[in-house]
Length: 311
Image (cartoon, rainbow, N blue to C red; front, top):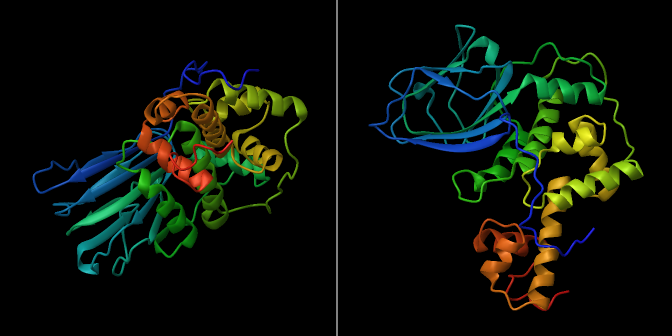
């Protein structure tokens, strides 16, 4: 396998319509606000920001069984915030930054915010949660605890880590979002799921043939357009089992491994060619030079122009 081959020639399986995605919606006083806010039938992250609040309550709907996880990014007074689940008004107090709501879409959650707000909403399909639960030895989880204005430090930290990518040009790859959904899903299961069994973690890594096949697929798809589910299927594993076994085998997640390979390839181009940083960024699978510079500094500790002599 030629690791030095140009990263432009991806052998990428077509991304399925169920691929996760992120979006940033900004509302003002003139923005029409639908009474029903419909999510996609996949894992999604939506940042919804308004400078004026909502004229009336909205209902949040999902085409598939799913959990709605909503995280506040700014304060709201108690007089400007209401939440309903199963047509019942939930008692609430003032909203503080990074407090979380976890509500099953089956209860047709409704909300109203009468003043400016900023929220991150996660739509987490139950199918993915069921797969993680089965892999952890929980079996199927029948119900999830309702939580409103929960002080959940894990969800808060997860949200802080994703914020820089919401509304920015360099969107996270589907591989990164797949990994993110597993981390969030495992926490939701253990913190909010009505569980029947104690988790039974498999501590083993990938078998040698699974390592070879996983790396083949990752090398062939260095731009990150492949799904974790595609690689897991080739290895005969569930997505969460594969993700955990890959980290056991290689010490890092599949997405982080992929970024490291891009950085290593870029370093070779910097020392062996006269390409500009813009061209090196493109050849190495990064969206643009700005994204390349951020990733390079994160992994190497230097800006690309300062690390040109690193081999």
